[in-house]
Image (tube, rainbow, N blue to C red; front, side, top):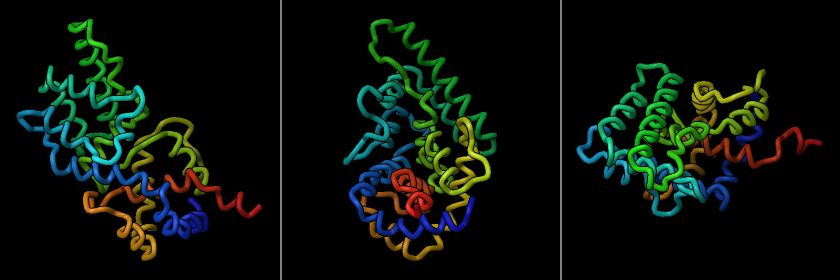
Length: 235
């Protein structure tokens, strides 16, 4: 990563945080707070815990849009086989285990369970469980459980951020562990910038998660994705 490029994007971040484009992402902080408040993998009624945890009163597009509705599918699986799903989440949230392995196992477990569910309920119209979606839902779960470590993931975001911040190599494929390391590496640049932190605190609403969260870095990534790169502006 090239420090001048990082600083150039940081300088634009406080102003961007006041825009409607930026504020449209705040429902993720609301969902993160709800997850911290309500989700308990050991809850007797796992489906009810999950339903309350994965929620936002203002916008739900980060987990439900168009035909994409993984929450609906997961609720059905939890109501049908709660102990199986519970064990999948326990494994996913076991920080003493290797990250990529946890992610791959979770997708495998949910896929196997969903196939069994459809075999037993051939008339059910749920088209997919949607958890093999470039880590979108899995990263949302991890960000809810461990706000300071994880944030929503997309391979396209990782590739673009690496390119625009001058990384020596841009990943050619999905790499969630590298993305997580990138969140940690860049976080200090943001938290040590007083203008960024003041604008960030002013942007958050009462219903949003207020603790340490990697969503701050993710939010900056969304600005970088939307912005023209400094190199292009100089031309």
